[in-house]
Length: 140
Image (cartoon, rainbow, N blue to C red; front, side, top):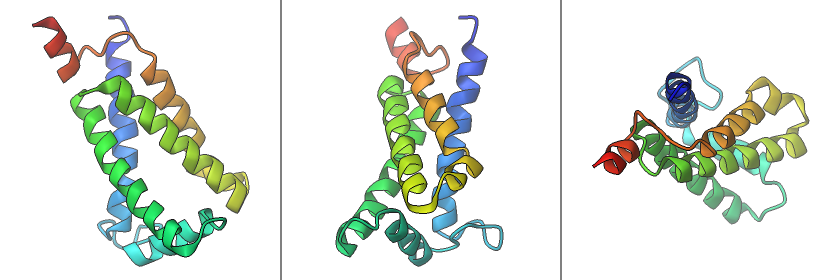
């Protein structure tokens, strides 16, 4: 119970970070963006997945984006929190590893992708998520 605020803060921070990346690829950040539109995001994804055929690379952009929407929403709501946190950790780990291989060590460090992955894995091993749908369901 002692660390419930910090845990909630971590859930929200990871979620907002992931949703912000999705907003960027849909052009919601305007001038202050990394990609600014879906096409640029596909080009970036192809760089990270250079070892895949182009069609699989583009497919992976859609799959990653789907998970980057679903998992943060689950984390914010606190629904199936362990699964969402573990899934976020895996997704961010894959991003960090891909960025490291394709772009070098600096890129994932600049975007704190390794830290986000570690935070998600830390969140996944918590015993209880007090401010969550999971907690409300369990208490009934």
